[in-house]
Image (cartoon, rainbow, N blue to C red; front, side):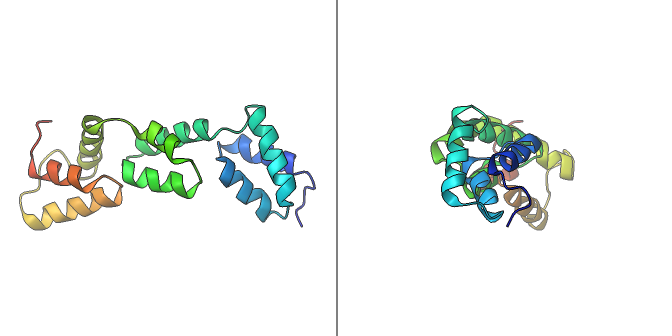
Length: 150
């Protein structure tokens, strides 16, 4: 059983530290031993009062992850794992190809410097790094080939 017999208080403590999705907060509260029905009632109340918002969580999460240099593929996957609905994910990741190419270039240059890779082995290494950061393969290939003027 949990130390605090009040799921509302636990939920507010969790929300005070950072935004959570409804799904994510529900999982945490149920893991602390609270009854599923009680958890749903608390989540409904917090949502009605504007203290729990998947849209606000998605907006804050996307902004943070983009600022840290992650691409749309990885951020989308992370938001799905947190139970954010797909339409909200789409709405917050809509930045346009040019914006993502610009972000990819910033991440690349921070890691490797402004110069381009001169051989296939180095291009592959840089491509793997950018893929791991969550940028789409077509954008990575386009950037590494030098198809765009930056």
